[in-house]
Image (cartoon, rainbow, N blue to C red; front, top):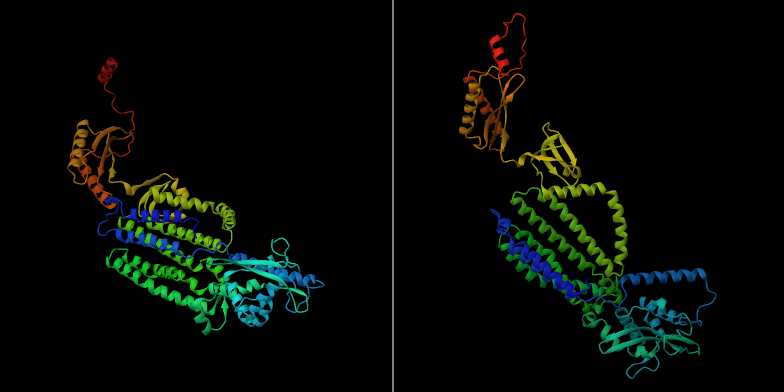
Length: 598
């Protein structure tokens, strides 16, 4: 799965450090009243994951030099196309000399042998072996047994590329071998390797045909000892019928089930102990972490243990190509990471909710879903890469499709980014009363696409997040007190002494009122109106409860009315002066004095 074990170990160290730092924040950040942060649980979870990831280092390495499943599928497809082409072309004569077993050329010899062993016709398969001049202890009477053993060895140690073999009666001429021999492949042994060869030999009537060389046949017992069923398989193969599926014979399927059961039993003990210790602490996240260890982690450990003994099943080349994809291992690893993301999401939601941050869970859930989707894509690409497919080509195709999708979903992406901005900067929170544009209302929901606000008319406005984030937002819920600033309009016939008395009494009342801040508490004669003398009052009511504020303001207004009434004047009303001709003339002496002063 990984190209460099050194870089993989570095990744484990970084992962462990990240998880350790989760529980090492400042007390102001993580010490939550009534809820203790499950630091030990998170650290234990990080260490367990690092150990499980490190266990991958001991998983049998991929069979890099052997064909992948993609190669086998392509080779099978090429063979099918070749057969169709031969049927369409209808060649006038077979390649090489006529032979009832089709041994005229190297390719037909290898193909005929493989077909015979596939049908378990070992009497016919023995006809493809050169049983002459065998070493002492071996004889032609062992032909059926040797044909069976060679089939077992080839299944487990060599994938024969039929299309690479020669279809010339004389074989390949450029393989640096004698003209009567062709090379099929090489099988490794502990002390070296053995070349599998086809040899051009005379038939009983003098016609030359191709068979597996006697040098190769002589090495079949040695090859079978190394690449045969093995002691575990020899026992099961005698008791079970010959049946294969996905490259595994029936006895191998039974053996795989036995290995999984044994691995599960071995993994059950340590995981049960760790889960019990975690749950015993009775912390907020103890239950989910214990369940995480009991199920996905236990199955992952069981699968890793079972893979250590996979060689006991003597898997075939086809089976190893399927195992190279590590399908079950990747599925379990994906399960582990998805469950881990859920645990971290729930933990962060609980922490933020306990601290009163109600907006976090709304954003954490879609973020966790996006992260889980990324995990699924990564493991799918790893699986395809292990099977032999080029993940770079797949990523390129996804990139082109991603650009088209991004262009089509431009507005949706803008709104999602707007949601992130609203959650990060938090100009408003759910439940806040605010003014935006020419509207006012209470924020009910900040979704991924739009923000829902209930207005004073009890209707709901849905504002796209991208537009809402760019608006001038006035958040009334953020104020710590509410301003009290009425304008008092007195009658024009109010005398200066009356105004001085009213200002003093109102200021005294504000300073003595328990629900009004002392500073500032200003009362000023601000000027002359068209029909009134105006007083401005400026003070703060230290409350954020609108209902309580209205009660205080009502009391203040009533007291101001009492003060104005006690001063012998009244509030102004709109008036208009009408001059009559019979009105007394102005004071001539006052007019003269004014003119003299001017």
